[in-house]
Image (cartoon, rainbow, N blue to C red; front, side, top):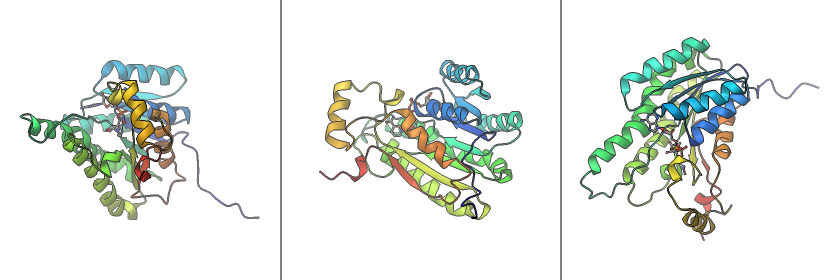
Length: 259
Ligand code: NAI
């Protein structure tokens, strides 16, 4: 009988770049790629956290290229991508994940600076990384872009409009580029996490988290970073070759709950 598939579910030997890998979901994603045998380029502005990530990967026998970079410094992005591609001999997968969530009531004095600071990291940097990675992804036989958006890219909450707008931007960017790059076989998808235990949510008291999750999340808890990373990594598989333009919620069912 003919075999069903020639599509590979292996990431061994693939070259990957993950931004925001010093903490939370970026770190979990980098670990998972490394566990699956990929070479992992990691970028973050938090040099100490990044070195912890890199040391853990090396300690487990993985190959890693760590660069302390502030992704809001546009000029630093192309050299960072070039370094990873040079060290590994190419780049197959880009995971845009570094992000900030800053409170910003629309009438606040610092609203405009907060807006700019948010967009610089959450959307502009995603674009610059994609542009820098594109020649390498084009040379790959299975180029993959996974952008981390948010359920705030699908709906809205009060007092964080820069964050919400930037994440809607990530969803729009993903959809447009999926159409634009589809003819070249490069897939572009985004993940929309719900409430996840990471650095971004660590200031929220446990009691408030529990209350929120009981009321809003069918699975009745916050998610763990690895639960998001698992889907990110799945979208990066060569076998995920017919999924593009998707905005996938990883939110314990929060987006579909009506009552
Ligand atoms: P986190 O705070 O644990 O990790 C974010 C990482 O991005 C940090 O290591 C931080 O240093 C890095 N970063 C921030 N600004 C940077 C810059 N200018 N240059 C370089 N690195 C920078 O938070 P988390 O939750 O793991 O965030 C990852 C992504 O997930 C973000 O895009 C965030 O918006 C998104 N997200 C998080 C949710 C949550 O509940 N935690 C929910 C939905 C989306």
